[in-house]
Length: 284
Image (cartoon, rainbow, N blue to C red; front, side, top):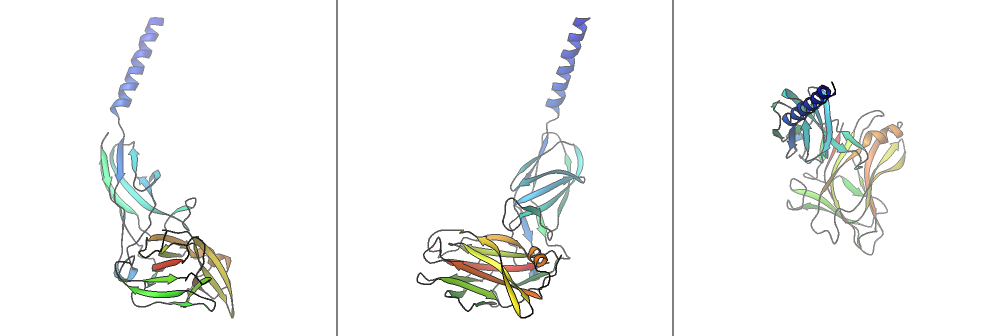
């Protein structure tokens, strides 16, 4: 009787081992991730840092880009991919970006095979996009009263993040404060989902925030402190992109009539701080 039991256990183990070996997982491998835009939506600059994968409506996982993700089920499956970002540039605050579409495809999954996807995303048709602050037709930033910096609208496509033009702000070595204000109001409502998308380059930490304007008074609200993307004199920019949560500010200052973007910098890392800005978008 003991011998029979022993033989049974050996056969069961061999069958399980053989089944496990036969059913090798398949893998999804992601390649280039791109954003496609229409002319009125501005540049196709994006900073999609992660992908949210679903198979037939069930979550597969959230992975950084690029990535490889196992598929345990076989057969025909609908794969849905949502793009994720670092909210306010923070790795601890990752979200599905609410204004990008999903990427959908169908694949027939076979054991041990690899399937390469190159997700292409768009803005949702319902997204309201103000891409006029791209510096291609002018510059809406003006110097604040205590500003000591110099601002140039550059028409040099080799320096711009996209298009032909970008803005460069420089704080001379003998000056103290760089301070500029966007003279165009931003309309936000409490409870509204809204983001500022921004391409920037800098050799010195600077702050970007909003003035919350209520009647004849305003409150300065610093939102992000952006650290250097490069060292040295920053003659050639090294661009980075960030998504700033405007809805958070609107909820905190619900009585404000409007808002204005501002940029400020004090010398810290660089003897002569330089900031480049390009492709600002308000997306709601």
